[in-house]
Length: 255
Length: 271
Figure 1 (cartoon, rainbow over the protein chains, first blue to last red):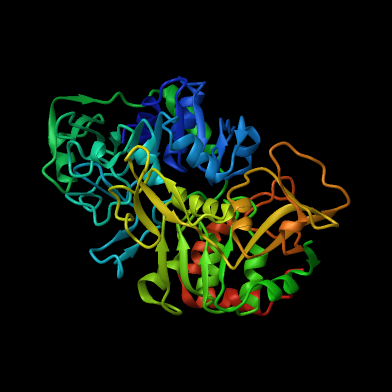
Figure 2 (cartoon, chains in turn green, blue; figure 1 turned 90 degrees about the vertical axis):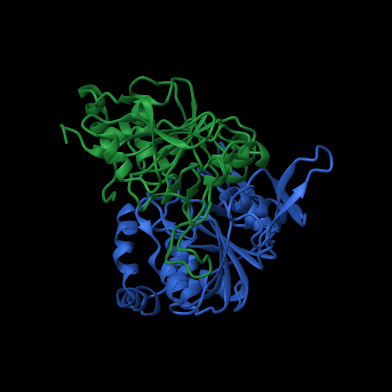
């Protein structure tokens, strides 16, 4: 690409979505890189919370696991696993949660459980839920990060591990899900956002050089495109320098 | 009072064929030496319970110790798949593996209920997901507000095994850093084994530490480095390279078999 990789522009786009002072439930990999990039640039007071119970972690290097020692050693406090979920996540104290997806559908429902139509005999057994269902239910908002392809962006997920907007308008309220649900889906082509009325994911922004037709081609449903489709600013040299510096601190062997 | 014994004696006394066995430690303090000892002693028909099965349950599943797995996230953290787990679920190798899956919050609350002596716990979760209504997850209506919430059945393992930094000579145990769900898992279980990095004369109080009194524990065993490839804060660092290397070892049945022969069955033991 133009001096930056797909991972880099995804990470930068995710980092820009975080505002200073927010509390952020962070997963490993891209979300962790994005949150730490934000903290190192425009959001120095971002509160990083990892599901291992580390609240206010300030790692100097990017962790390889959500339970790395540096997260515990730099945290404001370390709480137990029941406490992180029951006292901190469940009541809606956390502003934004990041989720990944093996599959995501038109209504931003997420599958990380199985590929295939038969739960008992899956074609592919995926890792499963982890903290995702409650992050999706209880964070004030959710940002999904996933590479875009027809296999991943499907009309209906094979299994709903984490609820986005269920069957559409009113589903979250009916189900008693307290957070606002996924507000951005950041892919390697651009950003999808839910339509405020239909709850359906709509392409709202693309990366430089990416066309709406290309994104539609990589989507397994008839993807709507916003009338005022925007273009995302490429990563600035400063953003790239900080991000590459962070990634260089990652322990050996990251995939 | 906890009995201070060798690791092999502790596993032999506390873990029996057919048991429901929980081994906890959330990324940190994973009781890996104890897991390898269970494989070495060739326990069978275990129901393995653990939030994140990690490489230790991948090893036990691949070695044929398990008939069932109860879990909430079955991946190799930071790396990818647990291939022995996947092979068991997708191809029933080396034997069929029943699975019962939950979310992290669900599992954590199941331990809390077990530790509290209650039949179930309540949480806001699962509504609208494919997990709702599966085993040990049910909908419940709040008798005060009418809100629809999730009830999850208590976990009551026959035996829970954890790893800690220190015990004293009376068998009191202390651990610190990321403390996970180990306290709840131990208190929910009928029997317990704690392996420790070190046995000291006096346990010094530490910020954020959990102390489990000797009278609440079954067996304590010295196992320095016993959480490898995980880590024990203050004693060891996470062996990230092992987690990466495990991907190749576990991907192939023969490579895994050779690993078992070399490191478990042919090895000198843990201590």
